Image (cartoon, rainbow, N blue to C red; front, side):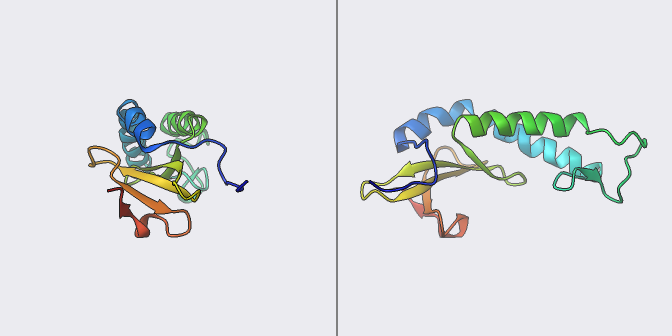
Length: 129
């Protein structure tokens, strides 16, 4: 039996059925990230650029807390959040040959139409058809 990175996998149909209920979360992620960028908050270092908050409170912005909440929800659903700026998510899947791949979707696309190998990433996207 093959070893896989992910414990949960989606068929193309399962991912496509799930996507409409997730789109608004991905759109919200992009908006939250944009707001944090505008406020000069570095989400990767968990601090305002320069190490100081605009009010000196040194607390996490509410936008960051919501961003983390959404990402945790998506992760618990088995979805991988890949790019906060572009709104890019992946659904782990198993091809008919047993290879583990990602079904790929980003904001602006109507449905899941692309997949890529784990090693190739977004740059290696191929049409599902």
